[in-house]
Image 1 (cartoon, rainbow, N blue to C red):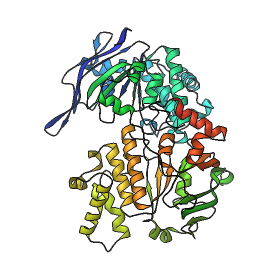
Image 2 (cartoon, helix red, strand yellow; image 1 turned 90 degrees about the vertical axis):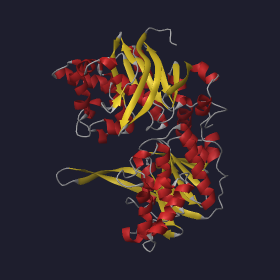
Image 3 (cartoon, rainbow, N blue to C red; image 1 turned 45 degrees about the vertical axis):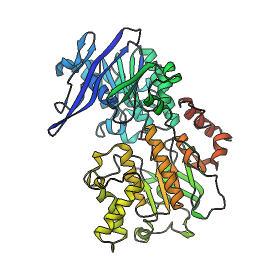
Image 4 (tube, rainbow, N blue to C red; image 1 turned 180 degrees about the vertical axis):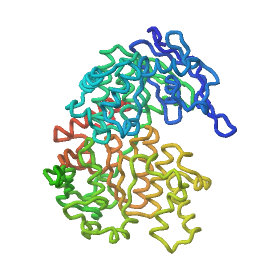
Length: 545
């Protein structure tokens, strides 16, 4: 327990959600305190109750569907669970602020950055007139936004992921709150931006003297940032203590499970003699920059600028680099989902000039698994309909029963053998299960080449490890060729035989995986590795080096 004076004291908190005639208890009598100026971490897997507990502090749960059968949340002796909505308006944004996990969905796409940060000052700080614009500019400078004057009139889609997260931090800190709740603040960011955001939060916390409640599944971040840790499982706190002591000697099996949940094993050695499946030579994807009344092209954004690569059967090519380096654009060009220049050879045939109709027969052999298992599955289709859609298009002669049997086999192969899964909908599954469904959708067509675009970044550590094991098993069984795009270097090392390091659309370094991770030649590669290692848990040896 903290020796500091509690700023927020959560006592015996329970949270229940009403579903039809049933009440589901999501949080079961948890107690924790956050001292003034202290950083406390709530850790656990998806569904453990971390975010629900934090949202209870802010009173942002979907009431009346959500309720609190027991508990108190005390700030200055006042129980927030008994406060009126008007009273909560004086607490939110001013006393307690929150940074949410995904800035793209948390920011309003129709409002400028100035409007959104300014709104916090007007609603919760009482600011008016020109002082609002001056304070917004000051905040953007404080959180490290480059050229802040130009960004005042920008919209969220015009900013990078790291810039959007900095704007979220500026909004949260606008009124200098006593407590900042950071809910998975770096999950969607690449390792170097993660390191910058975490360093920024530490600096601002020290400057403002505020407390922080950090919610995350990344134990490396916890070790770097938090003074005390509460471990949650199935709605209960199963272990807590000072960070260093808890990492040195865990008492509960679940805590040990979390610490051990790194992707295990290594891919087979790189085989330069394996048959070539995909090959590119000097591939370019340039987007024109048009200006003026006649929209004349004045420049180009060189998203992919002369990339040559070779993907071999049964091998995994890992592509790493910061956001905006061209990783995903490269993959989309290879799949002929965006226009490009330069030859793209698939099994020896140049498909770079193929139109949609010519690509259709090849789609079954060239598949993709997207980053976000929540956004890539249609909420209106059942699991059977989602996985079956490609079969219906590519195999029009198959009967409904044949497609049903094939889908069931594909789901069983990815670890979802229950026949009842076929007629359920995506919202009824966890994030890890949804990603398994997305993998089944790709695998049901029995492809030869699969592009994996950040397939584990939105998942818990233990679920990441399961998905990596699954992908490795499917590859060995089917001799699949993977193009694996990721900013998570520990996952890249566990799955990739060969690595391509990209920066500003160009390849700055490449080679067999072990060579890159143990003897990187370029400063940029070494910086990526250092950023990844700086906040990863060193458990049973270093993660990626």
